[in-house]
Length: 497
Image (cartoon, rainbow, N blue to C red; front, side):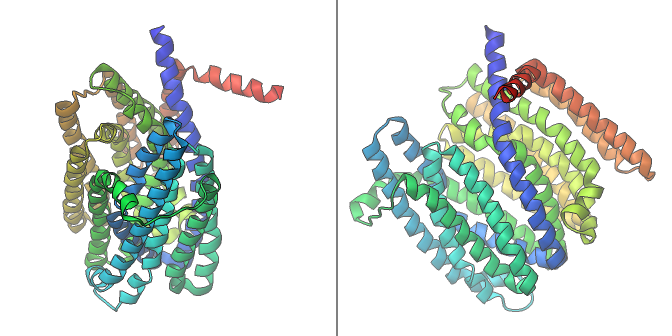
């Protein structure tokens, strides 16, 4: 009986990781086409400018959204689970009213800070007007975030998946023609039109579920104060996280050049997006399951450790294939001008492997509503990242930024393990340690293979290591989740239709 339950649990994790990973994979394919065209049209310097503007948007947006994208989900979910339609409709109206307030707040703050944003991020020219023109995007994103929180709260996963895909398609259709026609001049208009399209797609789905009703009466807005207080920790953590992105890219621009910013952003986005195939299921499936575990102890540890096990098994072969295939992927995804980023990307693979272990553990304070612990962990990590990136870039250039993120990841893992053991009695399982010791040496061997000067030897050794890692993961997943039986049943069901 225990074995059946264990297999069912692994099957569940694998199923939903595959589902949301599939959506993410489709988004990546569309994103590859978009990124390729934009990289060819703008080059590293233009990509660096785009990265700076996106960092600014993220910083201001997460500083002013009052954490509604997280806290609103809990409010909506509570009313939805209880089947209280009157409370549900009332909560939807409350969230939409607060979303309008955060939209106006973000827009005006971006306008106000435009001169300072220009001064902090550029040593040449006057870009105040450019930053001011980003302000409507902040407002559109606030509205979109509120509506997405509503859809998440009422479990509209199919609509959320469709919105994600259509948003990426809209981004492709809008961005490429504009940048093709007007080059760097079209960067801000393209960001604005993409944000508008994403908002319209989201409200189309959301308004069909809940027609638009707003109220700015003092009693109604007063009800949202508790929701806003819950989101304060997320806001502060978001400020630190977005601030780190902004500081790093501004430092790389000032200490290096826009080309360096574009290279760094390309390497970072390639690696982190790739890992998103596995991590995309965390918020939608793993987080609710972890939140449902009461107390601390054996069941809490099992829930976290099983998620880590599946993440390691799925991500390791993918990361190894990514590392080995970078000589093909970099010119395919961007252009030959971005080849200097390859060494950074190969190092960053280790940061992603470490994140597969750390991320499920970091959800513990979120699931327990412990905003203070969450904020503490995020703040310490952000400080480490900034210091290490600045120092390592000074000594080793672009590759040093990859080394910095790996070192920060290791230190963060140690810090998280110690704190979560103290706070929630969490302990890594022997199985997690075993799978780590199985795959980490293979990653190290793959990295050593990238140093081989003989091309045919590089590819033979690299491909053999990828195959070995894949075979190991599939064997373990078959044992844990009856993978082959599940695939056979699905295949038979399709043929019988």
